[in-house]
Length: 300
Image 1: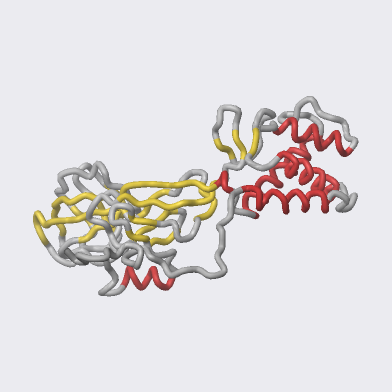
Image 2 (image 1 turned 90 degrees about the vertical axis):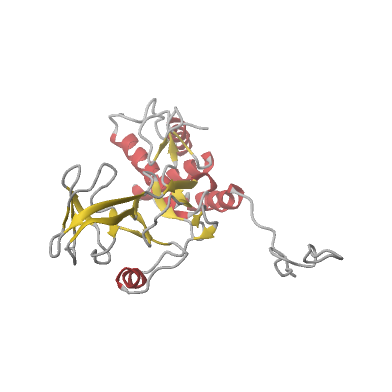
């Protein structure tokens, strides 16, 4: 792939500008501007289309803890927990006798104590408690989700969502708000699930990464920072895009606009294959259909 330095050099040469020997750290304000324009182009292209190279899979296993502890009516402190080592504030919920709904850990105070965001409604000693993690950090390169890719792979069921704000609060506040399907929502920078899960469920979804640039060692990046960086976009698209943006920034008009738009129009359909659509589709035969019913002995 062509390096960031080569992209800037090609664009500068085509525009009749001085061709820089380096870009990152260059003292020329004009070269620095070209770098900023190139990074702006890369970020806009990343958001403009679902490029195949940016589609990324994310997988994780839900965390839970079944334990015991002491609660006191009117107090938010839970004591005498055998171990709080796996728990974390604001990410874990608690259910059990005497525990109100939608109750989260507010702080982990010691190896045996936690404080909740709501007070207990009963006084119980050695009561069974169930902690479950419902908020999971998104990948560091997360930009946006890809709909209908969210699955509970342990149960082989699609997760339901993303829930709206109204649906989410209804689920967390109603008397009857659980079921066999996991529901999800992106909220507060976390991938949140409902209801609280009492088993280690393997969940996953696809998302669009913001790492459109790549270092020489192969590490994804969200911008060009050194001359040896490369990117996932076609070379001509980046070169023509930089030329177009440079001229616009200098107030010289959009003389390269058509050239850039032509490259963008060519690059999108060439990025990945497309489905073959039928003008006369057949009904789905995922389960039992004429193709898999035996001629005799059906049901034996």
